Image 1 (spheres, rainbow, N blue to C red):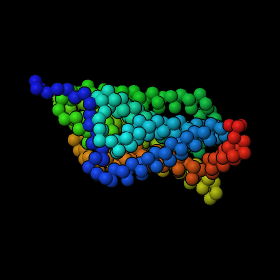
Image 2 (cartoon, rainbow, N blue to C red; image 1 turned 180 degrees about the vertical axis):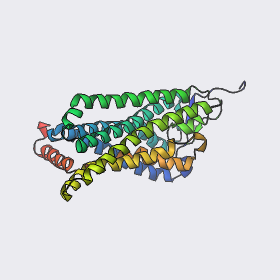
Image 3 (cartoon, rainbow, N blue to C red; image 1 turned 135 degrees about the horizontal axis):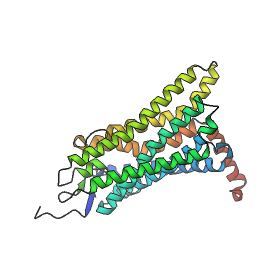
Image 4 (spheres, rainbow, N blue to C red; image 1 turned 90 degrees about the horizontal axis):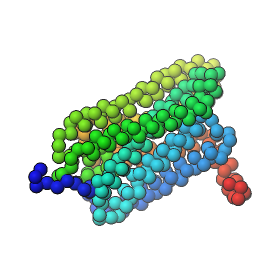
Length: 313
């Protein structure tokens, strides 16, 4: 330690081992990034402009789309720059800031998906009480609680990572400052910090997931008791989009964060991380726009207004 200097910046290795293939990845990821932005901005705009979509379900979808958009902005622009750059460094403070906002929006998304599961339970299993259970004040409180909970969790996790001393290698074997590849570089015993982070991650992932599973068990039971096939199809269609996003989001996040960082493997984890930093935000607007007739109709109406009455928007 006497001859060591503390790390002031980190080098993000990212996809540097792929050589010239990085240019191909740049084109692919840039295209996906633009689709994510345009898709989520379209969802947000449509929900805001169409009065028929001013319901709790679409309110939470709008909040989720905003969170997903900011979530990708935290990661993807820097990753795209690094794919074309030789200098891939990030200052110590910038790395901590990136981790804080990434974790904050990621945890917020988990909590919002749990809230959306409750919304579907209330709509299908308690239709007569739904206007009271999901009145606008309650919706606002649930959304704000999800955001505050997400960033408080992120603050604790980021503090546990960056309170450790870093005085050796500064090479982060990832394309952004994620927990496992960064904390492995600490030059002090990090076992306690890692297990606290692991326990918190398990809590944040499993509690909403268990809540969603319980909600859907009641939803399935209610749907099966609907006498008409058309009624069953209509009830299930309102849940299918949410369930698809939940499965992809939780399966990817759990495979990376529900294990200690000692079991981190750069190649496999980088591939899984690409799935939930790019594919999941891409999946959200696609699933909700392709499977949801209300959103499709609202998009057509908005396009019609832009073409015919551009000054009215």
